[in-house]
Image (cartoon, rainbow, N blue to C red; front, side, top):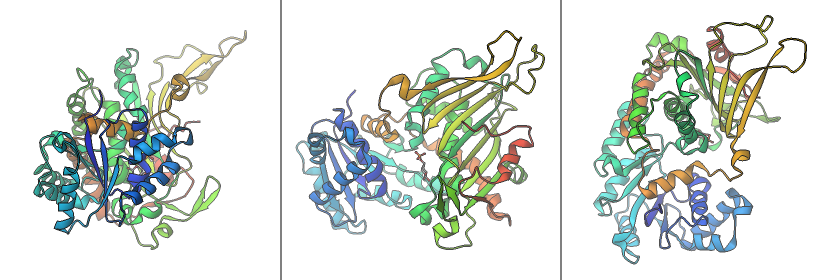
Length: 489
Ligand code: BG6
């Protein structure tokens, strides 16, 4: 289906997210002919730009962020012609009136669905929604898109959700977790539920444990002001990693519908083992990067990136949790994420149990348990580690081998960026891949005891040199259970 004809407003239209992600994503969809003819994109920001000024900033952003083979003059010009910019000071009622006029200033304004993408500081979500309501531009069909973080703990998340909820009904609210738009993440549901061979094994009888890793090589760069108040637990675990965990652990819904998948995910969040202060001490590891070498280049420490020492914020987290339900009881889920790691890789590894009996003498120590690696990025695909017989007449010599599926090779197609799928869903009014209020709040409910314990503890995050796999305590977290982190080769 084509998306609704929209007036798609980006508040924060000159910001990093808009220029790096949102506008290139909309351009790609326009290139594919998926934006209706009179679909407008309105940029609202504090910048003193006219339409032409914003268009040239967006043109430069497309040149920087879109593959040159996808940039055609005609297509770029057609896309830029959809763009209009308004300078808005949120405290100036006159500016909001001008925004109102801009929305009205089109043929058949009542027919366009209004989308308000709030790529602004989350503290402004409530106030912006109130303003939109006051100027009378929110009707039943309007939609609002919220970037994370939704709050910094349960209470503040509830406040944001309440404030937004006073203006928009839940079905009009699209809370983005861009991990849900990644091709390999969407494929997780298909792998699990459109095939038969995995599902019978996908439980505590056959799975030894699950690992979820989201490692980045970037540091906090210019985002220190935000990041230092967030830290890796709020920035990555509370949302992206828990969402991945939900997709791995959830029960099959009857069909993929607006609420069915989210109903199942929220049950997983509610089944996560609550962390007592003692659990936090034993089952979580915080780290912070020091100066080091990433890809052979020297990079500064977190303190130097911030410009001051004394911060207690973590840039790395590893933890162990469990989904306390019939399917997963007793199966540890190990999660880790960090900045300035040795490489950029996101993956889920399901490690299966050893065969119940070894009938090949001498195979001990040579073979490894079966593992399914779900490669989220950078090379999307799957790898299944098996044991095979080495060819030759000399008896059974067993060796590990792998079955590899690379999406790029299997489909010979460009893999769209997560935002392309998610923005199309917003424009079609499909919230399946967005976080519902109860999901966000359940994720905070589980995260909060960790934050509280860390805040009250005198211990500081453990140091790790940039360009490594994190503090050694992260390795110990698994080693004490007789396991190791599985690094993809
Ligand atoms: C964002 C975080 O949500 O995700 C960033 O705020 C992080 O800190 C980013 O770098 C990672 O996204 P991706 O798609 O590059 O893995």
